[in-house]
Image (cartoon, rainbow, N blue to C red; front, side, top):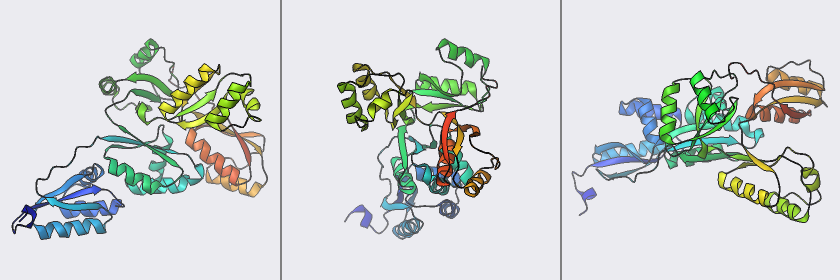
Length: 365
């Protein structure tokens, strides 16, 4: 007779994945266990995890059925059974299809139990970190819920290297300005590639405290845009490389090579981006990588087909409805905000273009 079949054998209930659990369901589980919601949610997002231990068989089975009915994935295991150790992950989400932003924001808000405004803020703040210190099962659950048109990136939270993200108008302490200058880094909004180890990053964060507009970013969560930065001759080797690597037809490539700066590819992982950079240098092309989603932009209105629909979009975004083309509609938006607004305007029949953001330096000197 096995231990689990003994009359007085004890059991534990293991949550193997968050599944389709909702924030109200998490609260119900926490209330039933008389434990804080945050504690239960943290345990579930780290799954697999032992939620309750030392239960009799009937109680364990009843709890397992309840958890399943609430959308969690769980199982009953023998008391004391050890679980495999898994790395603690941070998770970033980048929205690739701006037309799905409403659905993605709603799904993320429901998953995290936060407002849609808060969820959009997480997505719009590069590199889009939405979860920290979770297990792989939580990442899979999130990815499934968000659906198509997004890129979900995970990375062990203690690896790095770590860089800085400076928001527009952030007040940078003098000591940090000095450290950035020592590393030949310009103090400007966006990405500061410091390449810190986890220990160095912790030390810097401790010194910063809760400094508004300054964040440490795990580079492993970042993606890269590959930008042609100088004109080039359209010889056969270059044409073949552009078509093979980026699918740019030979008849189009000469126009691409004549109009830098121009993005050849977007949202590449680091290894692919580095491979492309090495190949580009070997054939004499000037190609740089830029962090995807870290840029800021304004939007210029070029033409309008339907004034009424345009006004409806402008009103929804709280913008001036009396604008006439050509005119700059907004001066400074995050990458995601700009793409979402441009998508809405295009749907309304307006023609627009992105322009360099007109930022106010503030205290960033």
